[in-house]
Image 1 (cartoon, helix red, strand yellow):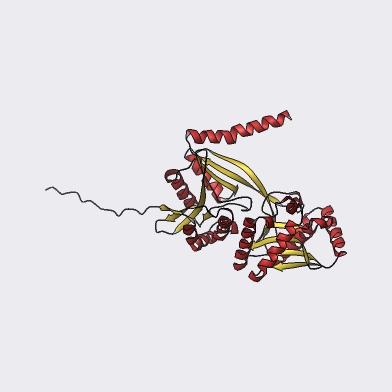
Image 2 (image 1 turned 120 degrees about the vertical axis):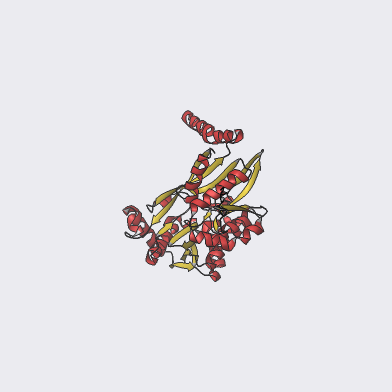
Length: 375
Protein backbone atom coordinates (compact mmCIF):
# COMPACT_ATOMS: atom_id res chain seq x y z
CA UNK A 1 0.00 0.00 0.00
CA UNK A 2 1.45 3.32 -1.06
CA UNK A 3 1.49 6.20 1.39
CA UNK A 4 1.76 9.64 -0.04
CA UNK A 5 4.38 11.72 1.65
CA UNK A 6 2.94 14.26 4.00
CA UNK A 7 4.22 17.76 3.38
CA UNK A 8 4.67 20.02 6.38
CA UNK A 9 3.91 23.59 5.42
CA UNK A 10 5.95 25.94 7.53
CA UNK A 11 5.06 29.60 7.95
CA UNK A 12 7.34 31.98 6.09
CA UNK A 13 9.92 33.49 8.37
CA UNK A 14 9.52 37.19 8.95
CA UNK A 15 12.26 39.27 7.34
CA UNK A 16 14.98 40.17 9.78
CA UNK A 17 14.56 43.85 8.93
CA UNK A 18 13.40 46.26 6.30
CA UNK A 19 14.38 49.79 5.34
CA UNK A 20 11.91 52.53 4.50
CA UNK A 21 12.86 55.55 2.42
CA UNK A 22 11.45 58.84 3.69
CA UNK A 23 11.98 61.82 1.40
CA UNK A 24 11.44 65.54 1.96
CA UNK A 25 11.23 67.84 4.96
CA UNK A 26 7.66 66.95 5.87
CA UNK A 27 8.54 63.27 6.06
CA UNK A 28 11.65 64.01 8.10
CA UNK A 29 9.72 66.21 10.55
CA UNK A 30 7.13 63.47 11.03
CA UNK A 31 9.86 61.20 12.41
CA UNK A 32 10.67 63.50 15.36
CA UNK A 33 9.20 61.49 18.24
CA UNK A 34 10.34 58.12 16.93
CA UNK A 35 13.82 59.48 16.13
CA UNK A 36 14.41 60.97 19.58
CA UNK A 37 13.03 57.90 21.38
CA UNK A 38 15.46 55.77 19.38
CA UNK A 39 18.48 57.96 20.18
CA UNK A 40 17.58 58.00 23.89
CA UNK A 41 17.82 54.19 23.98
CA UNK A 42 20.95 53.86 21.86
CA UNK A 43 24.72 54.12 22.24
CA UNK A 44 25.03 57.78 21.21
CA UNK A 45 22.52 59.80 23.20
CA UNK A 46 23.88 63.26 22.38
CA UNK A 47 22.10 66.43 21.22
CA UNK A 48 23.95 66.33 17.87
CA UNK A 49 22.34 62.99 17.02
CA UNK A 50 18.87 64.23 17.94
CA UNK A 51 16.11 65.21 15.56
CA UNK A 52 15.94 68.80 16.83
CA UNK A 53 19.59 69.51 16.11
CA UNK A 54 19.35 68.15 12.57
CA UNK A 55 16.05 69.96 11.97
CA UNK A 56 17.65 73.25 13.05
CA UNK A 57 20.59 72.57 10.72
CA UNK A 58 18.34 71.91 7.73
CA UNK A 59 16.26 75.00 8.44
CA UNK A 60 19.35 77.23 8.67
CA UNK A 61 21.71 75.81 6.06
CA UNK A 62 19.63 73.80 3.57
CA UNK A 63 16.06 75.14 3.71
CA UNK A 64 15.28 74.10 0.13
CA UNK A 65 16.82 70.64 0.38
CA UNK A 66 14.79 67.44 0.33
CA UNK A 67 16.60 65.07 2.68
CA UNK A 68 16.58 61.32 2.20
CA UNK A 69 16.11 59.43 5.47
CA UNK A 70 16.65 55.68 5.60
CA UNK A 71 14.68 54.10 8.45
CA UNK A 72 15.73 50.58 9.42
CA UNK A 73 12.94 48.59 11.07
CA UNK A 74 12.77 45.14 12.58
CA UNK A 75 10.34 42.48 11.41
CA UNK A 76 7.58 43.92 13.56
CA UNK A 77 8.06 47.47 12.34
CA UNK A 78 9.98 48.84 15.30
CA UNK A 79 12.69 51.36 14.46
CA UNK A 80 16.29 50.13 14.65
CA UNK A 81 18.12 53.15 13.25
CA UNK A 82 17.82 56.19 11.00
CA UNK A 83 20.29 57.95 8.71
CA UNK A 84 19.76 61.23 6.88
CA UNK A 85 21.45 62.25 3.63
CA UNK A 86 21.52 65.07 1.13
CA UNK A 87 22.22 64.36 -2.51
CA UNK A 88 24.85 66.40 -4.35
CA UNK A 89 25.57 66.14 -8.08
CA UNK A 90 28.87 67.45 -9.38
CA UNK A 91 30.25 66.77 -12.84
CA UNK A 92 28.23 63.60 -13.19
CA UNK A 93 29.21 62.29 -9.74
CA UNK A 94 26.44 61.62 -7.20
CA UNK A 95 27.45 62.16 -3.60
CA UNK A 96 25.30 61.24 -0.62
CA UNK A 97 26.45 63.37 2.30
CA UNK A 98 25.42 63.64 5.91
CA UNK A 99 23.71 67.01 6.53
CA UNK A 100 26.60 68.66 8.39
CA UNK A 101 29.10 71.51 8.40
CA UNK A 102 31.49 73.15 10.85
CA UNK A 103 28.59 73.95 13.19
CA UNK A 104 27.40 70.36 13.53
CA UNK A 105 30.06 69.42 16.12
CA UNK A 106 29.99 65.71 15.24
CA UNK A 107 27.96 63.24 13.20
CA UNK A 108 26.39 59.95 14.25
CA UNK A 109 23.41 58.10 12.84
CA UNK A 110 20.36 57.74 15.07
CA UNK A 111 20.92 54.23 16.41
CA UNK A 112 18.92 52.24 18.92
CA UNK A 113 19.92 49.45 21.32
CA UNK A 114 20.93 47.15 18.42
CA UNK A 115 23.29 49.39 16.41
CA UNK A 116 24.87 46.46 14.57
CA UNK A 117 21.59 45.43 12.97
CA UNK A 118 20.65 49.03 12.27
CA UNK A 119 23.87 49.86 10.44
CA UNK A 120 23.84 46.54 8.56
CA UNK A 121 20.28 47.18 7.36
CA UNK A 122 20.99 50.78 6.32
CA UNK A 123 24.20 49.78 4.56
CA UNK A 124 22.49 46.94 2.72
CA UNK A 125 19.85 49.32 1.43
CA UNK A 126 22.43 51.90 0.41
CA UNK A 127 24.42 49.22 -1.39
CA UNK A 128 21.52 47.67 -3.28
CA UNK A 129 18.72 50.22 -3.60
CA UNK A 130 20.14 53.77 -3.70
CA UNK A 131 22.05 55.37 -6.54
CA UNK A 132 25.31 57.07 -5.53
CA UNK A 133 29.02 57.16 -6.34
CA UNK A 134 30.44 58.55 -3.11
CA UNK A 135 29.10 58.39 0.44
CA UNK A 136 30.52 61.00 2.83
CA UNK A 137 30.03 61.29 6.58
CA UNK A 138 32.03 64.20 8.02
CA UNK A 139 33.33 64.53 11.58
CA UNK A 140 32.34 61.03 12.73
CA UNK A 141 34.05 59.97 15.97
CA UNK A 142 36.63 57.39 14.99
CA UNK A 143 35.59 54.97 17.73
CA UNK A 144 31.86 55.74 17.48
CA UNK A 145 29.32 53.12 16.39
CA UNK A 146 28.53 54.64 12.98
CA UNK A 147 32.18 54.72 12.00
CA UNK A 148 33.27 51.39 13.44
CA UNK A 149 30.26 49.46 12.11
CA UNK A 150 29.86 50.98 8.65
CA UNK A 151 33.40 50.84 7.31
CA UNK A 152 33.98 47.08 7.82
CA UNK A 153 30.66 46.29 6.13
CA UNK A 154 31.56 48.44 3.13
CA UNK A 155 35.01 46.90 2.83
CA UNK A 156 33.60 43.39 3.10
CA UNK A 157 31.43 44.23 0.10
CA UNK A 158 34.51 45.44 -1.81
CA UNK A 159 33.62 49.11 -1.62
CA UNK A 160 36.78 51.25 -1.29
CA UNK A 161 36.85 53.47 1.80
CA UNK A 162 39.05 56.27 3.02
CA UNK A 163 39.42 58.59 5.99
CA UNK A 164 40.70 62.09 6.57
CA UNK A 165 41.27 63.17 10.16
CA UNK A 166 39.28 66.36 10.64
CA UNK A 167 39.34 66.90 14.41
CA UNK A 168 41.10 65.85 17.56
CA UNK A 169 38.36 66.99 19.87
CA UNK A 170 39.43 67.75 23.48
CA UNK A 171 37.54 66.48 26.51
CA UNK A 172 38.20 66.69 30.25
CA UNK A 173 37.13 63.70 32.35
CA UNK A 174 35.86 64.92 35.71
CA UNK A 175 36.00 63.29 39.11
CA UNK A 176 38.90 62.56 41.43
CA UNK A 177 41.59 65.23 41.20
CA UNK A 178 39.97 68.63 40.43
CA UNK A 179 40.46 69.66 36.82
CA UNK A 180 42.32 72.86 37.70
CA UNK A 181 44.85 70.94 39.77
CA UNK A 182 45.77 68.81 36.76
CA UNK A 183 47.02 71.88 34.89
CA UNK A 184 50.58 73.21 35.17
CA UNK A 185 51.65 75.28 38.17
CA UNK A 186 52.55 78.14 35.82
CA UNK A 187 49.09 78.14 34.26
CA UNK A 188 47.38 78.18 37.67
CA UNK A 189 49.56 81.06 38.84
CA UNK A 190 48.72 83.02 35.69
CA UNK A 191 45.00 82.44 36.27
CA UNK A 192 45.21 83.71 39.84
CA UNK A 193 47.14 86.82 38.77
CA UNK A 194 44.71 87.59 35.94
CA UNK A 195 41.72 87.08 38.21
CA UNK A 196 43.15 89.70 40.58
CA UNK A 197 43.77 92.13 37.71
CA UNK A 198 40.24 91.66 36.40
CA UNK A 199 38.78 92.28 39.89
CA UNK A 200 40.65 95.59 39.98
CA UNK A 201 38.65 96.73 36.94
CA UNK A 202 35.21 96.30 38.51
CA UNK A 203 32.68 93.86 39.92
CA UNK A 204 33.12 90.35 38.49
CA UNK A 205 30.33 87.76 38.48
CA UNK A 206 29.05 84.70 36.63
CA UNK A 207 25.61 84.93 35.04
CA UNK A 208 23.73 81.68 34.37
CA UNK A 209 21.00 81.09 31.79
CA UNK A 210 19.16 77.76 31.84
CA UNK A 211 15.47 78.56 31.32
CA UNK A 212 13.39 79.21 28.23
CA UNK A 213 12.81 82.82 29.30
CA UNK A 214 16.58 83.35 29.54
CA UNK A 215 17.38 82.26 25.98
CA UNK A 216 17.03 85.40 23.89
CA UNK A 217 19.03 87.69 26.17
CA UNK A 218 21.73 85.09 26.82
CA UNK A 219 22.23 84.28 23.13
CA UNK A 220 22.30 88.01 22.34
CA UNK A 221 25.10 88.42 24.89
CA UNK A 222 27.05 85.67 23.17
CA UNK A 223 26.51 87.13 19.70
CA UNK A 224 27.59 90.60 20.83
CA UNK A 225 30.77 89.35 22.51
CA UNK A 226 31.71 87.14 19.56
CA UNK A 227 31.20 90.00 17.09
CA UNK A 228 33.25 92.47 19.16
CA UNK A 229 36.64 91.15 18.02
CA UNK A 230 38.40 90.09 14.86
CA UNK A 231 35.45 88.02 13.64
CA UNK A 232 33.26 91.09 13.56
CA UNK A 233 35.93 93.12 11.82
CA UNK A 234 36.57 90.34 9.31
CA UNK A 235 32.89 89.78 8.56
CA UNK A 236 32.83 86.19 9.88
CA UNK A 237 30.95 86.74 13.15
CA UNK A 238 27.83 84.67 13.69
CA UNK A 239 25.77 87.85 14.26
CA UNK A 240 26.46 88.90 10.65
CA UNK A 241 24.99 85.72 9.14
CA UNK A 242 21.20 85.33 9.54
CA UNK A 243 21.40 81.57 8.94
CA UNK A 244 23.88 81.12 11.77
CA UNK A 245 21.84 83.32 14.10
CA UNK A 246 18.74 81.22 13.37
CA UNK A 247 20.64 78.02 14.00
CA UNK A 248 22.14 78.99 17.35
CA UNK A 249 18.97 80.63 18.65
CA UNK A 250 16.96 77.56 17.74
CA UNK A 251 19.31 75.02 19.32
CA UNK A 252 19.41 77.18 22.45
CA UNK A 253 15.60 77.33 22.62
CA UNK A 254 15.36 73.59 22.03
CA UNK A 255 17.97 72.91 24.73
CA UNK A 256 16.13 75.11 27.22
CA UNK A 257 12.83 73.35 26.51
CA UNK A 258 14.52 70.01 27.18
CA UNK A 259 16.31 71.18 30.33
CA UNK A 260 19.74 71.07 28.69
CA UNK A 261 20.67 74.73 28.34
CA UNK A 262 23.71 75.93 30.28
CA UNK A 263 24.82 79.32 28.97
CA UNK A 264 27.39 80.89 31.28
CA UNK A 265 28.71 84.46 31.08
CA UNK A 266 31.54 86.10 32.97
CA UNK A 267 30.47 89.70 33.60
CA UNK A 268 32.33 92.87 34.51
CA UNK A 269 30.06 95.48 36.09
CA UNK A 270 27.12 93.61 34.60
CA UNK A 271 28.50 93.44 31.04
CA UNK A 272 29.26 90.05 29.50
CA UNK A 273 32.98 89.73 28.69
CA UNK A 274 33.13 85.96 28.06
CA UNK A 275 30.32 83.55 27.21
CA UNK A 276 29.91 79.78 26.99
CA UNK A 277 27.03 78.76 24.74
CA UNK A 278 26.83 75.45 26.57
CA UNK A 279 24.60 72.43 27.03
CA UNK A 280 24.42 69.77 29.73
CA UNK A 281 23.25 66.29 28.78
CA UNK A 282 23.74 62.88 30.34
CA UNK A 283 26.24 64.20 32.85
CA UNK A 284 28.44 65.99 30.29
CA UNK A 285 28.90 69.73 29.73
CA UNK A 286 29.07 70.33 25.98
CA UNK A 287 30.52 73.53 24.50
CA UNK A 288 29.38 74.18 20.91
CA UNK A 289 30.55 77.82 20.99
CA UNK A 290 32.46 80.24 23.20
CA UNK A 291 33.59 83.85 22.88
CA UNK A 292 35.40 86.50 24.90
CA UNK A 293 36.02 90.25 24.78
CA UNK A 294 39.37 90.58 23.02
CA UNK A 295 39.94 94.06 24.42
CA UNK A 296 40.38 92.35 27.80
CA UNK A 297 42.68 89.64 26.47
CA UNK A 298 45.40 90.67 28.93
CA UNK A 299 43.27 89.27 31.79
CA UNK A 300 42.11 86.13 29.92
CA UNK A 301 38.35 86.35 30.56
CA UNK A 302 37.76 83.21 28.50
CA UNK A 303 40.05 81.10 30.65
CA UNK A 304 38.66 82.61 33.86
CA UNK A 305 35.15 81.67 32.74
CA UNK A 306 36.42 78.20 31.86
CA UNK A 307 37.70 77.81 35.42
CA UNK A 308 34.32 78.85 36.85
CA UNK A 309 32.37 76.49 34.61
CA UNK A 310 34.64 73.54 35.42
CA UNK A 311 34.21 74.22 39.15
CA UNK A 312 30.42 74.24 38.66
CA UNK A 313 30.57 70.99 36.69
CA UNK A 314 32.54 69.32 39.47
CA UNK A 315 30.16 70.64 42.14
CA UNK A 316 27.24 69.17 40.16
CA UNK A 317 28.98 65.81 39.85
CA UNK A 318 29.18 65.86 36.05
CA UNK A 319 31.30 63.17 34.41
CA UNK A 320 33.07 65.23 31.74
CA UNK A 321 33.53 68.58 30.02
CA UNK A 322 33.53 68.26 26.22
CA UNK A 323 35.09 71.22 24.38
CA UNK A 324 33.88 69.90 21.01
CA UNK A 325 35.47 71.17 17.82
CA UNK A 326 39.18 71.16 17.02
CA UNK A 327 42.14 71.06 19.33
CA UNK A 328 43.41 74.57 20.20
CA UNK A 329 46.19 75.93 22.37
CA UNK A 330 43.87 77.45 24.97
CA UNK A 331 42.08 74.12 25.34
CA UNK A 332 45.36 72.26 25.80
CA UNK A 333 46.07 74.42 28.85
CA UNK A 334 43.47 72.29 30.66
CA UNK A 335 45.28 68.98 29.99
CA UNK A 336 42.42 67.27 28.14
CA UNK A 337 42.29 63.90 26.44
CA UNK A 338 41.57 63.89 22.71
CA UNK A 339 39.06 62.00 20.57
CA UNK A 340 39.92 61.79 16.84
CA UNK A 341 37.15 62.45 14.32
CA UNK A 342 37.28 61.69 10.60
CA UNK A 343 35.60 62.40 7.32
CA UNK A 344 34.63 58.87 6.30
CA UNK A 345 34.32 58.20 2.56
CA UNK A 346 32.80 55.12 0.91
CA UNK A 347 33.05 54.65 -2.87
CA UNK A 348 31.23 52.42 -5.31
CA UNK A 349 33.49 49.64 -6.67
CA UNK A 350 33.00 50.99 -10.20
CA UNK A 351 35.66 52.38 -12.50
CA UNK A 352 34.58 55.91 -11.57
CA UNK A 353 34.41 55.10 -7.86
CA UNK A 354 37.85 53.53 -7.78
CA UNK A 355 39.28 56.47 -9.72
CA UNK A 356 37.78 58.94 -7.25
CA UNK A 357 39.15 56.90 -4.35
CA UNK A 358 42.64 56.80 -5.85
CA UNK A 359 42.62 60.53 -6.58
CA UNK A 360 41.58 61.61 -3.10
CA UNK A 361 43.37 59.06 -0.94
CA UNK A 362 46.50 58.24 -2.94
CA UNK A 363 47.33 60.80 -5.61
CA UNK A 364 46.56 63.97 -3.67
CA UNK A 365 48.38 62.89 -0.47
CA UNK A 366 51.39 61.82 -2.56
CA UNK A 367 51.49 65.17 -4.38
CA UNK A 368 51.14 67.05 -1.11
CA UNK A 369 54.00 65.09 0.45
CA UNK A 370 56.20 65.63 -2.62
CA UNK A 371 55.59 69.37 -2.52
CA UNK A 372 56.44 69.49 1.18
CA UNK A 373 59.82 67.89 0.49
CA UNK A 374 60.61 70.57 -2.10
CA UNK A 375 60.17 73.43 0.36
